[in-house]
Length: 236
Image (cartoon, one colour):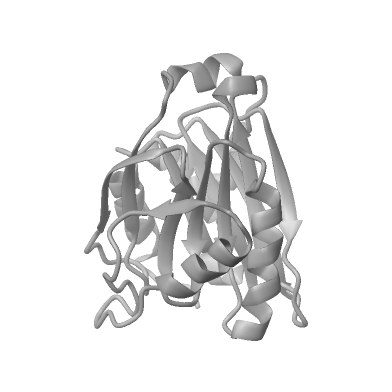
């Protein structure tokens, strides 16, 4: 429900996020009663100094909640696709954003998977199909399962992935026991550093990763042709 500390917490989160190049968000509100009709993706983009953002609304509960995935970026994107993930209960999605083109193309996914194993299995199969022929990709999200479950599924599907630091729990923030929040990258990318950050305005702890590309990252901007501007009506 609406909270008097909403604006303060969002600005604090934006300040933490501002030092990163690409940020994936899950369970952010796209503008409803619970967020006092503020699009939190757009707000964080504006306050955090991200000139580009994408939002995927997956589930709307009347006017009470607008559950979304989001992606903030300091790079312009070449295109974005909103995927509805398979499941008996609708409302899970994968936000696909591509940066650059040709040999300098990177596909980034912001995902939020289901709670049950039976629902997650086809969702991971769907995601594997998206990335299997992509040389450089990054998958970030709330997997709602341990890291080894994701690793086993990708291996079974023939998709080579890497993960950074393993085994550090992220949920719940106040007493972390579960490694639900994860970043996976293609085998062709080099992970320099990976860590769970002990920051607290969410019920999950965030995961940060530093990645080395086999080309100058500025090439992503040079090869991109589209971006998402921030509508003034979304800002407070």
